[in-house]
Length: 140
Image (cartoon, rainbow, N blue to C red):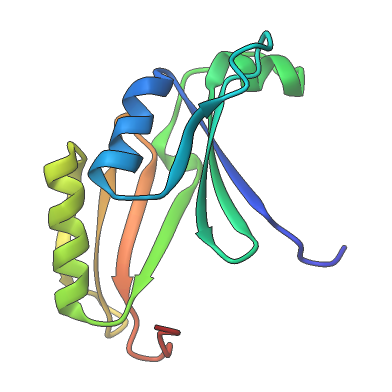
């Protein structure tokens, strides 16, 4: 299998609330909710970087599509890592998320491996890590 991941889909409980968090709070660009004319089809797409999108889809609809039972959400199933270019940028993104309504789980701090980062949860409990890694050159 060649690595061709193009969409990360998060199952959410309230599509409108999650749209507001990511669009209005975090500033991610989107056309808003599309596909409402289809049963189980309402979805939101955000362009993250060339070739990669974030999708928000109702958890019930995602379970229906994948033919798996709807289960209780768990923040420990996946972490979305957002790498930035400096410690100050970690602090800035964490504050932006807090103001957008994120729950601050792990405030930004020096890490045991020499970086700097913290964690927050979006309105559906999805866990985000905002981190600066001195060993990784930031593309921006």
